Structures are given as C-alpha cells and as structure tokens.
Image 1 (spheres, rainbow, N blue to C red):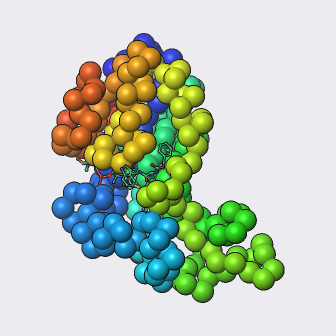
Image 2 (image 1 turned 30 degrees about the horizontal axis):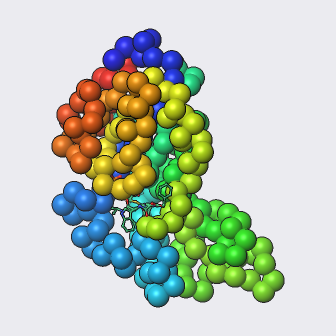
Amino acid sequence: MSQGHYSRIVVLTGAGISAESGIKTFRDNGGLWEQHRLEDVATPEAFLRDPALVQRFYNERRAQLPEVSPNAAHLALAELEKAVGATLVITQNIDDLHERAGSHHLVHMHGELSKARCVKTGQLFRVTEPLDEHSLCTCCVPANALRPHVVWFGEMPLGLDRIFHALAQCDLFIAIGTSGQVYPAAGFVDEALSQGAHCIEVNADHSEISHKFQEHRRGPASVEVPKLVK
Ligand code: BV8
C-alpha cells in the first residue's frame, strides 16, 4: 500500500497490536479471559457484585504499563499520521502504547487503564496507585466511588460520533490485531466497505471478520504494519 494513494485513513487496533510489547491478548491461549471469566470482571454488574475483584483485575493490568513499550507497529502508525494528516487510530485497547508511540489522532473507544472516574459525576482522575473497593473521588461531598475508566460489556463505547464520521469519509480502513468478536468495533469494516473504502486486515491469524477485507497481511503486527505503511 503506498499511502500516497489514500487521503483519509482509519485504523482500528485490538489487543494483537500490543501482544509483542508483552501485553496479553484476550483470546489467544494464555489470554486474559483464561484467568478471569468475562462475566466476573468486565461488566457493571461485576463491579457492583465484587468491586475488589474488578479493581484487582485492572490493577494487575495497569501494573504492566511501566514495564512495556510501544513496538514497531505502534511507531509505524505514528509515522503514518505524520505522512497522512487525516489518519485516525481507533483503539479497542486500554493501554497507553499508541500515545507513547506518538499518535495524536486517537480514540480509546473502550477507555483507558491510566484513568479512573467518579461513578456519580463521571469526572476523570489519573490513577497513580492501585485502586480498591474503598477508592473514592475528590469531586463530591460526601465522596463517591472511583471506577476504572473502562467500557464494560453492555456499556456505550466512547467516541462513536467521531468514529462513525471518520468511517463515512475514509478511503482506506486498516484493522490490526483484532479477533472481530466484539461489537460495535467488529462492524466498523462494514461501514467502511459500504462507502467504498479499501479494507486491509493485519493479523497473525484468521479472524471472525477476515472474509470482509479485500487485502490481508498475515503475520505479526510489528513486521507487517511497518511494511504496510512505508
Ligand atoms: C455495546 C474493555 C451498545 C474492558 C472491552 C449479547 C449480550 C450483551 C452484549 C452483546 C451481545 N451481543 C453483542 C453484544 C455487544 C457486546 C459484544 O460485542 N459482546 C461480544 C462478546 C459478543 N458489546 C458491548 O457490550 C459493547 N457495547 O454494544 O453498547 C451499543 C451497540 C452499538 C452501538 C453503540 C452502542 C461494549 C464492548 C466493550 C467491552 N470492553 N474492553 C477491558 O479491556 O477489560 S472488549 C475487550 O475485547 C477488549 O477491549 C478488546 O477490545 C475486545 C476485543 O478483543 P481484541 O482486541 O480483538 O483481542 P482478542 O484477544 O480477541 O484478539 C486478538 C487478535 O490479535 C487475534 O485475532 C489474534 O490473532 C491477533 N494477534 C495476536 N497476536 C498478534 C496478533 N495480530 C498481529 N500480531 C500479533 N503479534
């Protein structure tokens, strides 16, 4: 793909882009869900039922962040944004590797590990130490509980207006390292296809949505993404 052909690029990333940085994916063997049942940690009901478990699950993942770094795939996307200004990265990931790689046009549609929010006002706070079931906001009197600023199953993803606007305009859609099992993200390729964008999938393996893409780059993101965007 010589990016010169394309003027409005949308990139969707999933856990697979961060795998080579050392962050576990959700569904590959040894993925996160093996240790924790989906229903036990990534739903509002779980947080109400067992806030300590949910806070521990996100503390564990947050603790990884200082130990990992962006890989060549994250860095290549930051370079792509420099070369083609109208590049938007939509990430399903809640790590901070895209921003640390230098991407600025970025939507964290499933939230961010590094932030927590007041359950009452929605005010955001940077997380500087592990949270627990007693963690409280400082924006209310009396204080309310702090929850991870993460989109759980059944909750509305973030930035959808911006996302669907970009999908309606793009001439190139690239999905990197996502199994295509979670909606609405898994349906973004349909939006791009419906208005004539060229769609490329970068994945180490076959995904639930591979058949929808006109072009495939099979292999590790840190190898395939730099090749794709140069
Ligand atoms: C919504 C944050 C309404 C938390 C996540 C039935 C009941 C209830 C709900 C539903 C239902 N059916 C559908 C739904 C909707 C539901 C859903 O999709 N459920 C699924 C399970 C069927 N979705 C929701 O609830 C969403 N909200 O629908 O609101 C709505 C609807 C439409 C429009 C507006 C509103 C909210 C979903 C958000 C859930 N939160 N994350 C947290 O992180 O703890 S989702 C979670 O899974 C991750 O964030 C991740 O984004 C997501 C998907 O995983 P992937 O990123 O794809 O990762 P995975 O491990 O699966 O795959 C990795 C891929 O990488 C693989 O393909 C692998 O081959 C590849 N790979 C691995 N290594 C490499 C590689 N590729 C390249 N290189 C490598 N080295």
